[in-house]
Image 1: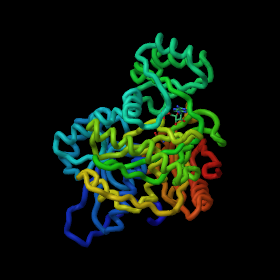
Image 2: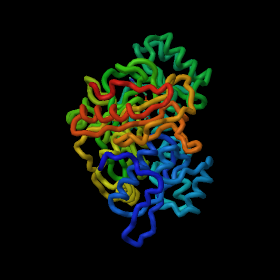
Image 3: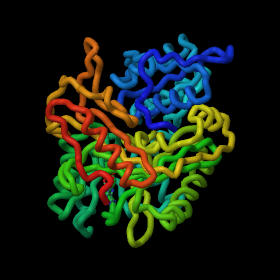
Image 4: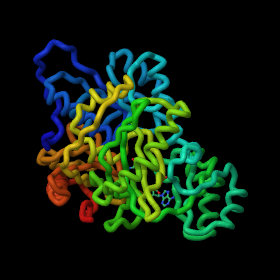
Length: 436
Ligand code: AMP
Ligand code: GLY
């Protein structure tokens, strides 16, 4: 994989065969979706085949790779895919998956990569996921689920602290509150269940044992028979250097995760991957798509915090550039339930996320991003839109810059060298990604 920036608009891929272009639709609007599109484009360039990419809704980065389409309802998306004779749809975000986009496409006889609505509950309902883990012997924190605040608070009276209170439903990564004492935990339960801070996601709460350790993310592809893991990744969730301050959607990623050693992988395989696979097969939760394991590595072993049934953001931006396989071929194999291996280069990736000053609280948008043309490593637009030929910030997380090198030190240097070539008003990024 070369380290050049994403291919530019209309860089028509010359073809030396008469096959019609492959048409791929990517759903989503972030850095993850830009990275998925970029990987498809790189692979097709390499094999000298024609590709047409569509993104719903996409962003200023995906507009360089293909066509951005603005459609809202799942029905409209399905009809678009049908009319445009899309060969494969790849779903980025959890929302469409949990609303059943895969079921809808399959009913219409169209090819899509992702879990059906039933399996998507492994992410969309923490209560469902924890019950699945417990039933199938997947190593996870002790927990209890409640449908109302009274019993939850009564339960808290007999617990040790810290403890973790979670809204069961989808809350855009915000529904988890770590509580140091009874008062904090009671407040969290009331905020989630009575004030409905996270809306309907809080009609059920999971109260969970607090685990101390370091985290690792492992993405994998599931073909309905086997789970094939990616290289590990390390997310940096906090806004401040030294991992302090408010939680964000991710300020940087390292892949592989430098702290995640062979013995951790072995424990993950035995205590988490294998029992998960057994459970999926036994409970008939069969699909072709992504399983993302959110892990906590403690002195008592490797624990599963959560499943996501989609690619991680920003984990995708750091891991896909290391994937040596042709992504389209792998997804097609997975959809057919065929065996495949994933090969990763032994390079290291360091992804630095540039955000709008003020994020994750209030921030302004609409500032021009300058200097992208000087970037000499892969970069992925997370929150920017094209307007009159200019690229304007449109979100909290704005650009993801990925350095790739033989060591993490080199990868980190390349990432920051290129971050410094990009400018927008009130830009902010952490300077310590890859230092540990
Ligand atoms: P989740 O959405 O369940 O992955 O939780 C979001 C974040 O909260 C995780 O990435 C951890 O940093 C933290 N977290 C979740 N569950 C626990 C736990 N049982 N113990 C300690 N930290 C946790
Ligand atoms: N980076 C964590 C996630 O995608 O949920």
